[in-house]
Length: 83
Image 1 (cartoon, rainbow, N blue to C red):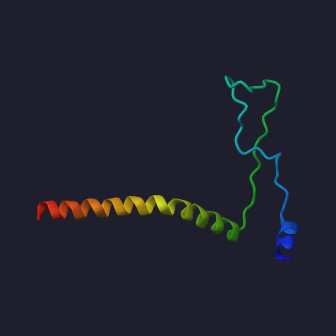
Image 2: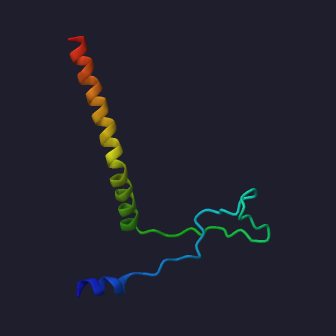
Image 3: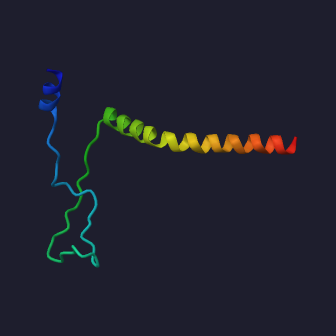
């Protein structure tokens, strides 16, 4: 029952909004007659902005953890070698 409720709440994806103009001269799909759609500035609430930033940090967390673990390993190896 909860799954049906989530399906009803799902919003259709916007396929009209241009995020990046890929109509670049030199590409095989270049169309010189296509007009350039300027991206519109969207308003984002403070809650949505914080959710986006939190998601970005969650995506970067494994990479940062590996870098910090590698640095700790290098310090440990240097300590043991120079002891």
